[in-house]
Picture (cartoon, helix red, strand yellow):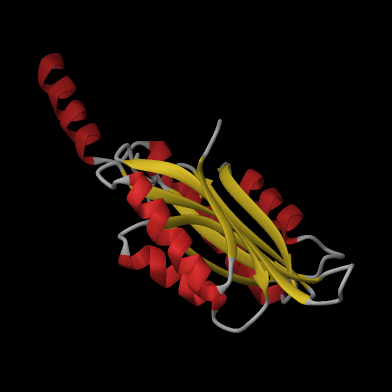
Length: 195
């Protein structure tokens, strides 16, 4: 009898996801004076969840926060309700949805790309399009527009982390990329990420 109960319990646990397999991705925008990170991390903690990853950036006059929360299914459901109340209060502009953990990408080699150029429309599109055509994923991107102190020229600076499939011939890719950049008059480097 005890043995049958243990087998039933084990079978039930096999189909139920572990508590750490429940994830909620949250995006929030708010004013820099009242950081969305404080409000979100408080709600995540109060609901019994944990912050797995977080990104904060000031874009224009808005503070943007992205948070990946993790917890038991009931804690994630509680967090969804808390976020709905926070959204109704009107302090933040929120979106959220359930997701899963990222699977390891052991076949991708991490490289860093840095680009500096005169600012002109379409540069980021052309960079993204180049890498997409090579089946290379952009893992992270940060770009900013600034005015050069010495000349006053409008400039673009972009830093990308890319995942290159390990079957790609790196020297050929680097040559193609630098030729592509030369054609657009972009100053660029592509180096392996060093940890």
